[in-house]
Image (tube, rainbow over all chains, first blue to last red; front, top):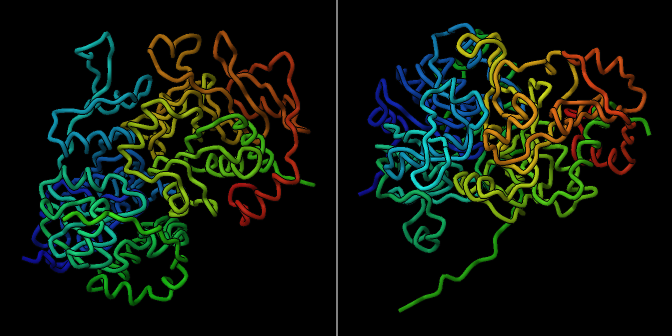
Length: 303
Length: 253
């Protein structure tokens, strides 16, 4: 049976107040469409997990849906600071924000432990860093095999992961190319998975190129088709990162008032992503890349 | 050709990569530095981006370190789990190039908070991959502009460990990589004393005085016995910076 539903219904049915959620994607494939729908539906008390909160969580923090952040780099990539994040941490505006902070490798390791259902994950990091003092969840243990100490991090198992992809079939078998970030680990770590795609394809397309399947439909609860759903981030081969918007966000977010006005106009004032795409359309024209095709490969037919 | 202090800093930093085979590219200034090195004297330099790319050949300067241009034409694109475990933790990276909001005399870097962690005066972005880059790369190079706010006697928070308390502190903790080797700034280049691992000025940029450097450092800085004068950027380096890498002058003006 098809798992394709609207973004509105996916968020209504699968994201609950108080949930721990991960909208992942490292610079690439960040599902802003889902974040905006969560803001529109005024979900509350969410714990938001992401390596890079990016402007997607800056918007959610400003909208007041987030009570806690689990993260490793809270900057506006290539630009500077995240202003709403800073207001929350430095001034408790619009509400206090609890922080649980790691490094990128630490977050990757947390998802790996979560995905493989392990009790912890070891990594060579944190030696000499103050991060373990700031976050007691980062602990040091002795190796059972050698006279060696190593830091470990606990599993991360979000209630919901929302993951953007280039394409999927109606069962949620999703394929990604370009930077795959932690999409796979976050999907397997989570209790529920929403896959959001640029393009819905026939199962034959998936089966013709199985190496590219990152998330199997087996663990997917809903498929949402939302072209341009990752803007202002990007989708490899489909549209470029809107770097100008990331720079503009610095200005928009400087003051809570201008940020709120932006949310009113671009989130609350719209009924969904289709409206956003229509309103943003002029911008997209300059974001289409040229073509760079891979050589076709032969999987072979074995009868 | 005339040049800005930032252009000189970027060119001098890129020259530090001569002879390196694999560089881990940090966010901000390190990005333009590593791309300049690849386009000038080090065409075989393999660029590694934490976003999940080995052997990048960016056709434009990536604005963010997850820009799609780092993927197209790269040797390998992979998940971050493979990148951090098999490339970085496995020990395949010669040089990690980092920026710094705050750095102390032993090269410890803070990109987390100014002030107290629980009640920060300024909340900075945090580690990203820097905490493990600082530990796992064979050596570390740092690029940051010289000023008293950045160069402090003691950082408020050690995000990425340098030589910790100095001397053999790093060895005692069994940290894998050798730690910071040079700090390239817009006024001078600093390296670390063999014994104490204390930062000292080893090269002054043309027309920069010792007094000017001291004014911009928050402790009584040491100068090496023979302080050199940093070589000016070449015409080719300046052209690459101005025409190809940073035509808007975001990093270099």
